[in-house]
Length: 154
Image 1 (cartoon, rainbow, N blue to C red):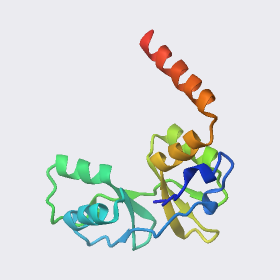
Image 2 (cartoon, rainbow, N blue to C red):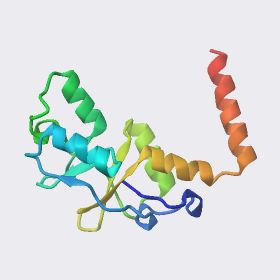
Image 3 (cartoon, one colour):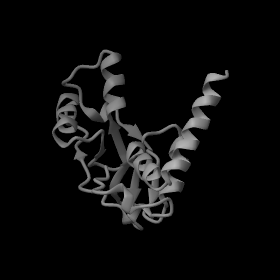
Image 4 (cartoon, rainbow, N blue to C red):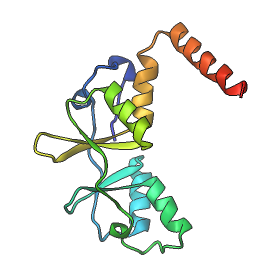
């Protein structure tokens, strides 16, 4: 996932390739669910790409679902990984990526280079941070206030 040192340095039109995507967390399909969970904790991340083709990811949501379904901590992560994850090229803007993620109901988006190789993963929380910091404080407050009052009229 992206390691953004200062989200205020980016805006809605910033391409994903301009973000500091940080090192990609990669695990093997044979790694245990326990190993992957520990990797997430140690690296403060919530998504990893599997090393073996085709492109697959595993998220903290996948781990939670696996354990809720009675999987063992020793089971290989390849059994629960998301096949055909959503991805975007480096040229995709922050606004486009956030809109796609909201539309698709996903919290992680794999960023790929021109050859289709994963270069990083960006999370919704990281994009939301950029979106929030790119707005004028009063405009942002007005947007949130409008949203909150619509929710209470229901």
